[in-house]
Image 1: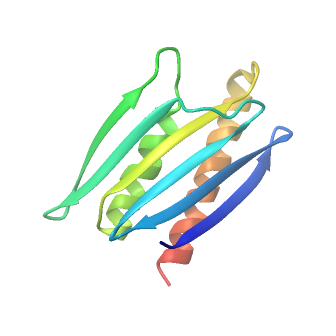
Image 2: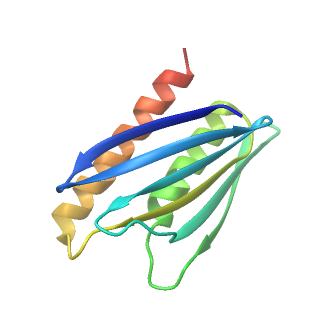
Image 3: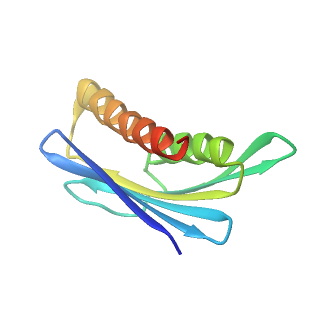
Length: 118
């Protein structure tokens, strides 16, 4: 099994992405903020050139926004199944804070995509 670790700081806390290769498929664990947890599970499957996305979202969570993004993008670029477990929590970040968190996550995704496209 191959493992990779990426992380960045935003709003005083880290967001970390751990990738584990399992056969031809991948598991991504995304966690961070002041209280990491499990808030969503997103699965991207790549079949016949198309990505299909399925998810489980825990009540009162919005972690699927980032989880779905990673599952879809990584499934497409790696052309395989990618399962993402995501849980990022910040206390009352406000709209601007949420945007900073999303920008940070997209930056991590770009870093990962760039490394895997080599």
